[in-house]
Image (tube, rainbow, N blue to C red; front, side, top):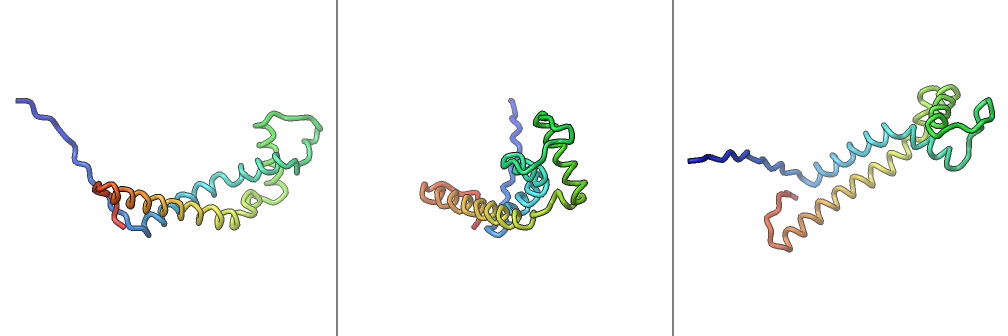
Length: 121
């Protein structure tokens, strides 16, 4: 006789507050890590930068690295995160609410369809 091994799957039940907090923390980390590059991208997009000292066009990666270096020289390391507070307020609340609404809609959909929901709300 052949026995099949079936792993036990544990379902983690999260409250609405848990989902909101997880979404907020995840977005805060992502925004903080990528903010310096978003800032440089914005500078490049709107042309608010001077050309390098040799007045020549650089490749995209070199432009980014040059602008990051210039920002650090002008404002210090914290200059890479200038304006982060406003960006965090905007993006973290939006993402956390989106996660929460998604979870609520998923639970409601399961309920309407008559399926057992793996969500606790």
